[in-house]
Image 1 (cartoon, rainbow, N blue to C red):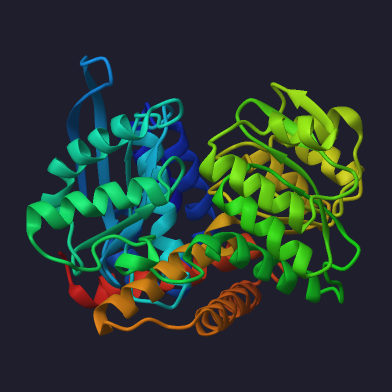
Image 2: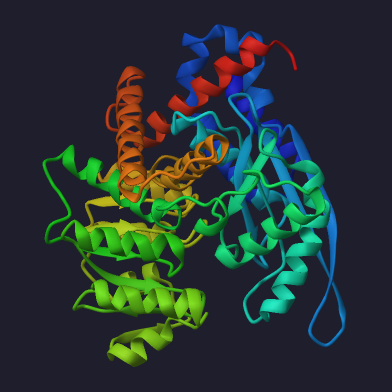
Length: 451
């Protein structure tokens, strides 16, 4: 059994109830086999086993009071996975599905995601099984304050800098940061995704969606293609999906799908700029359901189905797929239907949205496919830029931040392509992203000795 396989087997043995974490570890570690021969120093220092173990796992109780005066209890998490190249950095997810295994998978992925940005940020993730949907502003505020009453002791601008993720948008970041500022009596860059009025960066809300689209454009360019005239399927209806739609429109593509947990809408005419603004108002302000889009614009609506279910079952042609909802949303049957329906490119806006079997199908059919850790790195990259602005007490213009974001996404794409070729896997973005991120973190860990 190889060193890599021993590490994978041990992870499954000691954490048998964490399938998402197993999946993430397997996906990364199996592509690292070539590094064991080229870097015997990593084997000797047992870097491979050390890198799959979090630096610190914090689990805590979050009691709060609902509008009826009832005391409710949720569980909070912060997994500080690896800080070899910089302070821990990664989002907070508030969703009913949150558990230890999911947060560990996200923190592990974030380690390599952040390394690829070229910025000095380690990997972490956190959150709670609290679901903001259907809660009043007062309930969300009280939960966020209760959550921060414990989290504050584990974070700081040079220690761990959380951000938003699923279920944690501008409202939640505001409540979290406001309470941190109150109990610590300091105004620091301890959270990113803040409002512009209190230290946030322009382009941060747009960054993950914009970055995903910039990366996809670089992928298409390797085959002499671009977004002009292409039919694009985007899943989700949150921050990433919204701004992916906006940027695809700017680059000449036509997005025809969006979804949330209740339904998928298909707009064959395209979700243009006006419709996109409506979606932003619907989801960010009214906190409504995507079905209301179908009612307003008289489009097809498929309740209880994902974008990929609809494409498979209805035989809808798409050129480019941008899964931007959640983990494992595309399975083998969805992947096969995308191939059949003419899809040439899959760029992951979400974290690990494609199952291993789906990825295998994409690669076997010579599709342009790149994993979320590379494609969606624009969000955390711009969080890093927000940290820089906070440290210098400066505010950059929209044009400057967008320019820096584009440069970062181009550099990530270049690193993936060149690393894949160096290790004998030309055109394999998965191998390229994993090895490029790993080498940077592993070299830093090696330099520190056994710590």
